[in-house]
Image (cartoon, rainbow, N blue to C red; front, side, top):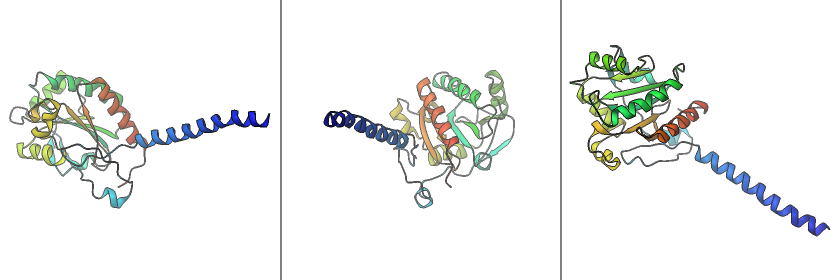
Length: 222
């Protein structure tokens, strides 16, 4: 009888061990990676100041949004940012990405910890006035979602140096120029890239929302 009882108990112990291991593995998978270059290779880095010091952050910038307000890197410090590049006359992937992002923005409309930054790549055509018209046409809230324009050199520098959205890297997504990249980036409270998504796909935007909530829930490390 004792032998039979022991044999019955062994699978239970094994199942418990497997469940604990699976839980730990799931927890590790929910730790968002970091992205440091144009390959967008995910890197899981130990949470330490020394290790994180090697991860690049978004550089300084000064641009103007659709309301005429000056938006700089200081405006997003300590906040989670959703970043993409677009232009108002785009007729293919930009409208799809815009609608996906509007769905995300509606969820955080009252959360000052979250900001959306959409950079035009045709600043010569997308003036502040044009961006204001575009925002009105598509119900874009200027308090939470900034459509940004400014010097072409500033925008291109941000695209290449901070966000790594170069034509060469975008080509792997089936596009050839930055004007048409569907990539959307998730930037953490310290200005580091923590997520990369295809803005035209509903499932990818669901993943973005899930990852954003994870960033908001976790303590931040400077």
